[in-house]
Length: 259
Ligand SMILES: Nc1ncnc2c1ncn2[C@@H]1O[C@H](COP(=O)(O)OP(=O)(O)OP(=O)(O)O)[C@@H](O)[C@H]1O
Ligand SMILES: [Mg+2]
Image 1: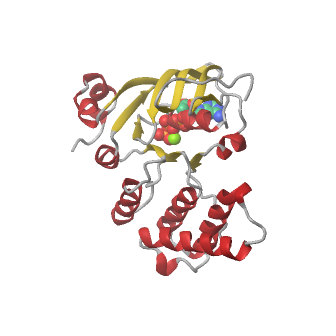
Image 2: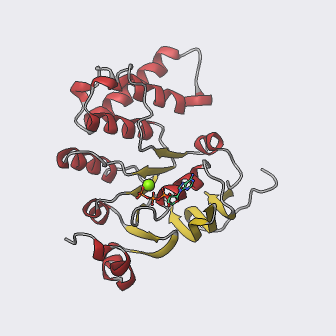
Image 3: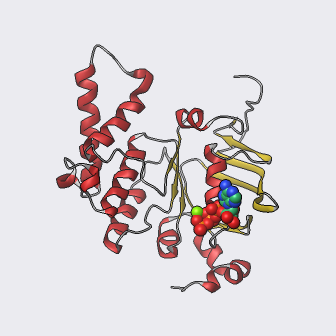
């Protein structure tokens, strides 16, 4: 590739270099520099309005940073459009459902699997490819215990089940980097546990960044945690380091129920 594409000698799946974004006079993301390692499960926490979703929007290309660079697997993607980033394997889950409610869970997941087959699509073997995609859908539905609901229209499922289908659709795309924005919001404890199991079983070729307000989820699941406060990165480290960090405790954990 040419121009803005540069190669970085790092094991980082994703690197943010001095990223800043203001809305009017308010700086929502303030000079964030962060490496997310290939294959890791990183938690992103911070109080409401800390800039977590804005940071995801910058990584996925929905928001252009005022300053700074986004480097994905060694290539500068700061100026790429969202769909160009998706094609590189950079996928997010949304707070609002993106599936087709009139189609079944199986069909939604199979469509994502087919979309991934993309340019490898062999027109002379359509039945085989369709069968592969459906088999993948069944496997994912079984993994989360939804196999008996898979044939129903997604619109007929409970809120929690619909959220799970969203996640399965994202996984069927086999992303290189999956950004999950509060995937367990609104789920029961039991549903949260099922989603956590699925994320924990995640394929090491997928890097995962997880935003969650439920600190039990983040601290039990994530290998490293990054803390945002007022748009700035307050700390990055292991769950133990984050728990012990006095600044984090003051800014965030102190105002939360600690376990
Ligand atoms: N498009 C926008 N225009 C104006 N202000 C925005 C826009 N997007 C976000 N903001 C502001 O930027 C700040 C950070 O918002 P953001 O949604 O990134 O926070 P968050 O950490 O995801 O919060 P929450 O935990 O509540 O989801 C907030 O003050 C928000 O009002
Ligand atoms: Mg948010």
